[in-house]
Length: 137
Length: 327
Image 1 (tube, rainbow over the protein chains, first blue to last red):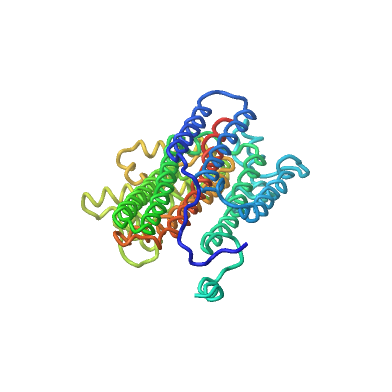
Image 2: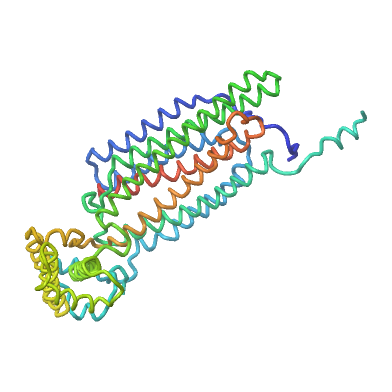
């Protein structure tokens, strides 16, 4: 690929109705807030809200960031990042879905004894002296 | 002029058909995607991996109206910046065509849109500051939230102790050690004149109540309800209430510290990016009427960066504001 350095700024992409895109983005935001009001099952809500967020992100990337009109170089730059970013999330999935360890933390023990409304026992205090609370054992 | 001399006059460059600045910015945005993916991914893992994670907006003081309004403000700013970039491109085109008047109008228009973008960024940070203030006011801060009853009872002891020390330093100024000041104050109670006498007496009474409380907490004899009752009883006395205005019993929030850490980490880093964007726009705005063609690439790259800041918020809004209150 060859190009001339120092060439003037050329905006070669066709005209885009930016205001229409802006209105679509505002509509999506209103939809997100509406989803907060309407009652859905948690899974459906997460899916819908994130789907709206992805739609907004695509509007911004495709039109505001002009990716629709850029050359093939965009794939060269963005594909590795996208794969690594998705890989990071996938790598974290076992922590979410596979409870291969026994969760045991002061918070969980407190929740278990919450019904009794008892202050923490001295034994617990000895086990974690001076801790602010959120460290797992 | 020969063909070879023409080639020499216009050297070509291998590489992508975009400016070096734009290429650098896209590579930078690639690293930024990884950075925020790590933050958001960690948040998701902590959230769904922690039973009892605080999600009630009444507890976390997450205001959906603030998040929604900020989303609208950022989207508006994104629109303004893309129109500013378009105006810069039109100005550059007019300048190339020797139409200086039109070019000047276009550059002026670009400047105005960038000023509006800067204003939107300021509004965004203002709303964020209001949200942060609410968190500070309610003690939603990393390391400042009790997660068990015992921690709440002990944090009350620390707050109360700190407040008493501050009042002691006010009533007995000087550099003496606190125990010396305390002895001096207690000696002075009987001999002092009004209104100082009442002040010293109130402090002594509160100190006595605190000593009992500290003793009971050390013996692990105070439950959260008892601590609350004792505090309310003392705050009900008009003469002691002013001395206790900075003493609060914080109610335990399970995983509150992790929540606060992730919330401030994600929104804080995003806010830093907003500030960097404002600096970029300020550099262009400072050009005033000198804004011209050579700034077009800078405006485009600043705009790309700004759109990325908008993109991050597009995902933070549902993850922090909408989903937690609904599942």
